[in-house]
Length: 206
Image 1 (cartoon, rainbow, N blue to C red):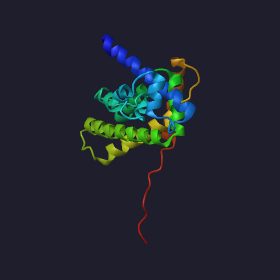
Image 2: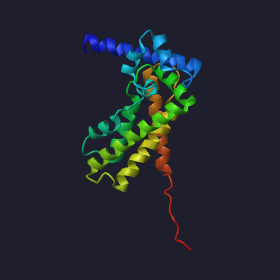
Image 3: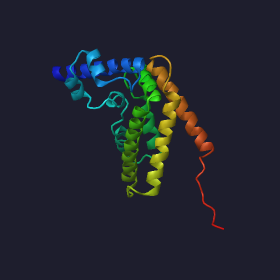
Image 4: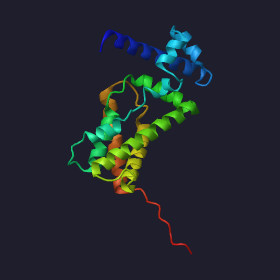
């Protein structure tokens, strides 16, 4: 990475941290892009060049950007799909995601503001659709195959649930956080295996 890229990366990080402080102090909706630019000591046009919309200040540090599907494609071809998905999801959880305190601050903003929450949901749906394609590709099936679609959606639901359970791990020790994620992941999958979720069934019309 050259000097220009490093400077740009530092500027992005500074803008995100400045925005988070304002969001937490004044609220997401009440904070204007002009307020962020002023607090960050940059021009409004510069801010919009880095972040065209306010919600990207929250979404960008959290976005997976196709990593789930990419990781699945990189798993050994002869690995069973359930094992491949499990290792893919675990790898995504334990991958270093930067400052854990920053992630907790972002979570506080997301929980208190419907706008970022909806945008995060949109990003999550995009990731799920990409995962559906990766599963279908791995199994040699059509992208709209019911098994592939529902497998991806179950994996996405597990991803969301485990994220909720592990989001606010105290402290910044990555090793402790990783072990916590592993323990929660193992507990959830064990319980689901012992008592699989019910599949809705229609009875015959009377």
